[in-house]
Image (cartoon, rainbow over all chains, first blue to last red; front, side):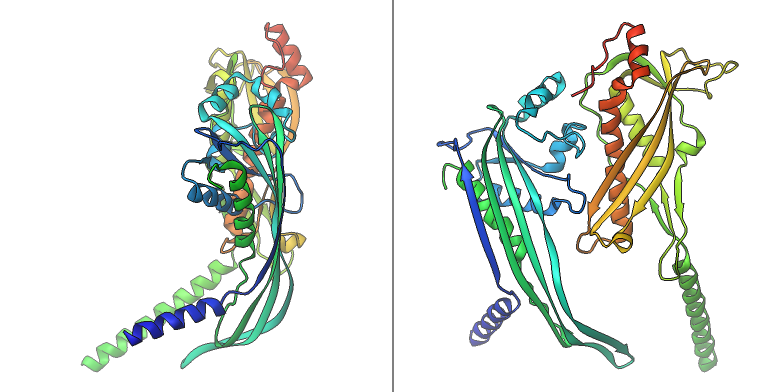
Length: 222
Length: 222
């Protein structure tokens, strides 16, 4: 029994030790919030991919979708790839609507209007942003020989996430809110024989931050 | 006797290891080869009431791009897009036109072929790629320029135009250069499909040809 407690304590200590700190800020601006939630309608979360030097990561979009769907099981979140494949070629970077008013023109296409009706999409959430790594410093040397191997050194880097979610009401063809989240954190990797990564979960924190705010908008339970 | 067998066996193993190492080194020196592979969804479009013939010449259906390395530290690249090109254009054009058929031979005055409204001949004129090692930007990019010819079964040119497409994908954890270049190429092919679907009826010579056939132009524009 004592052994199990000691193991648990060691595990907790190692988990605490191997996560570095993250600072996160969330700004929210919403109007026309649905009071009863979104009912049996569905929501789609899409990444903006128009910038030349970055792409909103598909992993981040999946993370936000999972965050919302796991916290409120009544909300149907359509997967990004599934949605853009179903509506190909209308949501590719070249053709995706940039303003809510563009939805009207899109719905003039009969097959698109029928598909949208079938998917029951009430809200479309566009997420724009990325996580960038900067301020990398330190060095590490690893060697391997007949008797074994090991590393020695120290590395550190900083991650910065900045994402903005824009919520479109599909029925009213209007923007009904914006949520902005930024997170920053420093990760470390000391190595004495074995490298020990102490990672700051910057993108995960940004995902939770934006997911919680979107839940407050979409869910009747939050 | 046993000793001699062991000695012969270990000698054989050393030889095998040496051959494998040499082979590994030779293979390691070869170009990085990417055979583009992806899923291409059918377009959600009201098809044009036309029977379109397709002619993919050998250059197109076996299209590959070779880039010789500029220094010893870089690798040469071979990007084979032919199979993916055929798959994507077959799927796309089958959705854009009511009937699509592959021609038996290249359209020309003496060539016996099926009866169609027109024959579309795509050609990849140029392909360029960029990886983070080239640009210091954390995205992989593929850019392509196509030349299309719309001809009669007799080979007379109805319209000829160029079209570009672009695909990019961000760097991702545990993603190799090959996987990223493949993903960027798939994005470029999808973009080519989106560009064609929204611009085909806007090509002036195609507009004129559609009007002659009693079809209003702009049927597939958003």
